[in-house]
Image (tube, rainbow over all chains, first blue to last red; front, side, top):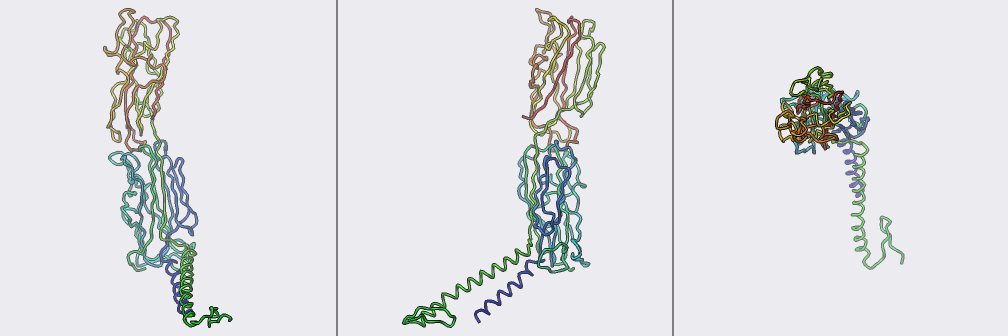
Length: 220
Length: 261
């Protein structure tokens, strides 16, 4: 009797574990990130959609020594869920006191190219995936020179306040696999841009955290 | 006496209070089993999550470097006045690298103008405090002290202008020269030798036989792209008083350098 009493909870927990972790809500790499227009810059991240999302971007030189029009980084991000979801982003760092140094508003940030990750990505016809305003743009395209001569974007890191929802929608995965798979969700491109300018000299850095969590309860 | 065996096959030491001892023993064993099982359960639960390899968060770290940047370009076309013959051989083109060539023409008494005077517009841009220095060499074919030498070539920087979108207008630029060398305050005929001399501080090229600061100041540009064509502009003045110089030809070479110390 004692053994049975203990074995039951174990079985229940083990049964529940996969359904809690697998496919419930998952964010991962969506493929190899890319960088263009950089001088001494780089981007590292896994090309595998089975790996965690851990990307390091070095925009490189962004003074006028970089004569390219813009430095652009595309980071594919994969999402999986068996329930409505939302993706929020927060960032820390980038607190330059000098207004002429790189500020959050100088780093363009947009979301584009939401697409299925293979055949097991869920097609919902009662709800759509929504890229929240103002992030539905390619900041390399929406970049403009403001009245003060400084470049601004359709959206930037300055549009992030605390943990900001940037994307939401219905469930993303058809199956209920207990593992990440190559083709069981959706992917979007997070696009980051920085235009070389006469910024005050120095090194700037920041870290963004992408989080997927249960979203508004919309039907599939 | 051999040890007593319990129903679970566990051995207990015999004593007078066997029942009570066995009960105590069971009470000790049960928590251990529960602990072991609980740990096993947690371990399995956590390993399940690990095997599934899923996560609700991801990180993107980014960094960027801004190095000090300075540049010197032409501020526009050269103006040459008071010349007799000569002319601007290679003119300045605004926002292009400075590479100007001027033929000052006749500098002997046959040129009756007070001065042969050239203005060369300079444009500076930087994202840091800057220093503009200059060095000059003057080479004449003459062999006597009456040949044209560095001291006979007046030099100065004119009015400094910081204007236009994206230009930092705070702070003060320091002009280390005396300005327009043709001003009466900056030169006169030497009462003893009769030769005209540029006497003010850093008012002739003899003060720039090696790289010497001519202008310095704070950051010039705000955070704007390089395509923004504005900047700090300042005219560089060169002047020679036509005199009874020894005949011959003279070559004057001037190099401007801007740095961000």
